Length: 170
Image (tube, rainbow, N blue to C red; front, top):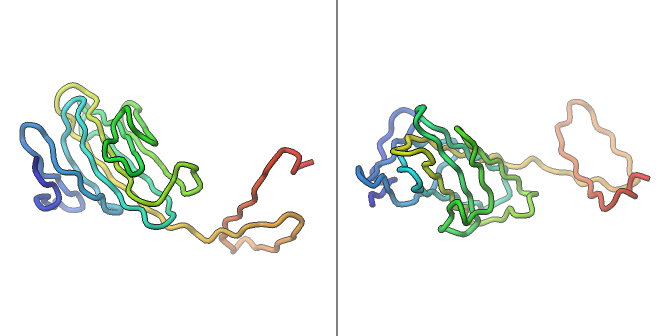
């Protein structure tokens, strides 16, 4: 296998991942926020990456084909480097581009390492791209039942209220 990060060559805002010419394999490496990576993946093989999550954030992972002969499938697992189409926490396997948007209020969301696998779905060599965008959370103000709150249109705030049952509305 070829180590991707140390041998990655930069082409503008895109990093072209250095890979073994025959197997298209490379060592998994950490994706950087707002960085685009181009790579190749053989049919039914996986390109693997990881992302370290140290605080609650919103994460957008996108992968897309670089030509009409390619189709990526995206799988993500928490703390499991064996991620694939059988072992995953989240997946997106549409025809063409795939994306996952992960929110910290998702019950499966946890801090730690997210392992990402991109499968080359089409026959032959799939030419693909991947990027990750990480957004910090805005402050969330919890609302209390029976309290009145004054806000203006100029305020940009997120509100959260736990609804335990339908009876809360009656």
